[in-house]
Image (cartoon, rainbow, N blue to C red; front, side, top):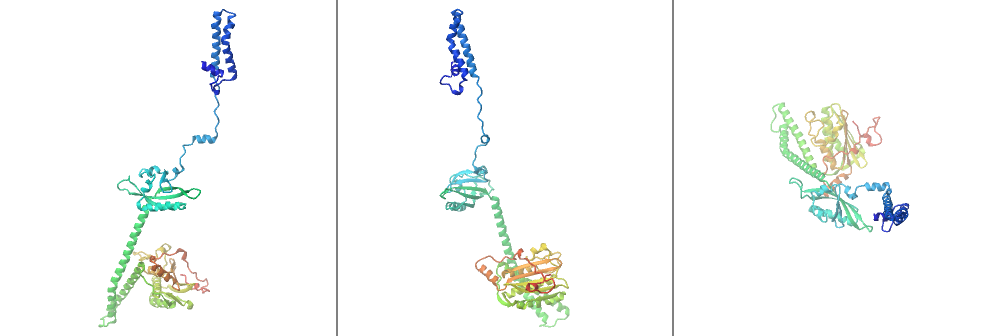
Amino acid sequence: MAARLGAVAGVAGVGADARPSASLRATTLALLAAVPGLPLALSTVMPASAALPAGIALAGAGALLAAAASSVREPKPLPSRSFAEELAAAAPPATSPYDLFAGLVTLHDARGLVTAVHGRDRADMLAWMRDPLGRGYLDQIHVSDRIGFLAAIDRLRQGGARETVDIRIDRPRIEANAEQFMHMRVEMTAMTAQDGSLVAVVAQSRDISEEALLRSETARKAAEAESANDAKTRFLAAVSHELRTPLNAILGFSDILTGEYFGKLENDRQREYVALIHQSGSHLLSVVNTMLDVSKIEAGRYELLTEPFAVADSVRTCEQMLGLQAREKGIKLTSRVPRAIGEVVADQRAIQQILINLVGNAIKFTDRGGIVTMDAAREGRDLLLTVSDTGIGIPADKLALIGQPFMQVQNEYTRKYEGTGLGLSLVKGLVALHGGAFVIQSKPGEGTVITIRVPADGAGIAHENDLHAAGASTVDFPPRLAMDMETVYQPSGDGKDRTDERARQKTA
């Protein structure tokens, strides 16, 4: 009671925020002053024995009323807050921005030691990793990868801004059949001071085990394919060499029988059979020689003997060799070689082989009454050889397959044309050895145009030889057709040659 009265009266020691209003305090002080005065005033109208307790009772009642009034206070209004303050109060506890990054984010000092660990996948990675703090992260890296990791840190220390390195981290807590190391890609960013010195390194490590597995599988399959290709090349070379010996005997003895050096044959049927033996042996020898040439080109052992020679002579030789075959099939074989084309520097045997294979294919796939044309021209420093025909043509979806060894447009069940599919493959290889280009254009039912472009001065051959001398890889065989080089020379509309030798090119 005394404390409450003191509070109402506003005495010292009571907080200012607990004091009542001024009017209430004045009323309370008046009642306290009336405690001795009321009994005296009442004693004037009643006996003193009754006035004293009555006055004290009235004063006490007034004091109680004043105390009760002081306890009833108006609530103090709360201070108002802004929207930003309300939003900040409702936000979750602050976290490091590095915890939002994928993978494991580690902070390293200038020596590469880990000072903090963050990252969105931190819990998953720390489940199988040892403690990465300090040297823990470095000690878990595969021994052969630590040098690369420390070298990247050193480059950042010397002023680099960012580095990326692939490492393998040991996994001690794994299943028995799982991989021992986890493949990680670490992307490091340098944090520098104002003077450019390295303060810290932020490293983000992510799991690339699937990518590493794909790379390993691709390398394994490439090695297997290369091994199989080498085995196939060795097989072709071995078989070809083994076939040439008996073929020489067959051809030699069939020549002797045909010449009737050791006696006359009894009838024409025997002479016919001997001629067929010689013809079949010659064809098989041609196939064997082609296989040997293909094997040499694939192995990078085909040697070109360059010399200057007249292009017209090679074209004429090809026309003489295949003219009889064309006439027997009812096909017209023509050639157009300008007089000013002169000589070129190349392997004459290879150029003639190219023309023979191209013209032979054109005759084989052209029906009776068709036309096969050989054209030669000079365009700048290049020699252009074009063989066009009016044959069956090649579908567009099969053009990419042309030139692969043992590949023909029609399959082995439906084709009606003989051959091994090595002709264009050999042509591509020989053209590539000359540093040239092979372009083919065709439409089914209309014909085919094949254009060979080789340097006329032999510069492409010298370049290839320099590459082999420097230890470079062999020529890609068969070479791939460059899409941007595929062009067709259009003939003049009136059928007459125009100012450029390019007008001499014939389109089937």
